[in-house]
Image (cartoon, rainbow over all chains, first blue to last red):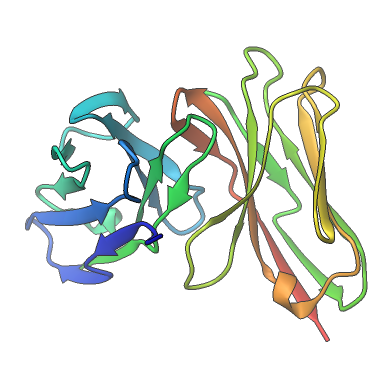
Length: 111
Length: 111
């Protein structure tokens, strides 16, 4: 069974640009969550999607958005990039509420 | 938002040593406690999900206990091996699928 995949794995952008990251969940999983990890911080919850609807949102500015497609694949978008957005972005897919399977992450560097 | 704290921040032990880490969380409105192992350049891997006070789970040389009344969980590794070197994360749900993570304990096991 294929795991959670994320593309791209690495990305370099400059301040002010926007970026879109993609996450393909495990087949059959309908919930996709996104997390951000910056140096010195734990994983911070961004948002969670289920059946194309955002169910939960973390404490991030409106520049961070996401969506989920009918095949459960999810994308997150960050507009007007800032240096502080440099981070590892992880997505996780779930079938049941008490299990989350993580992807390898996308490393975003903002110059 | 639940405050999840982990200690120590990092740990360096010799092969064969046994070790343990602590995860503390607010005991009110407890739902579940997750432990993950995160090796460098890999995805976080779920170790345990614990829900009941007094729960004790074991996976090989790794075990965990849970005290929901006082708000802490311990993770134990018996006879540490170099392959146990990783960051160990604990997390508790804020709501539904949104996990609130601690900053992790980074374990280094040297031969």
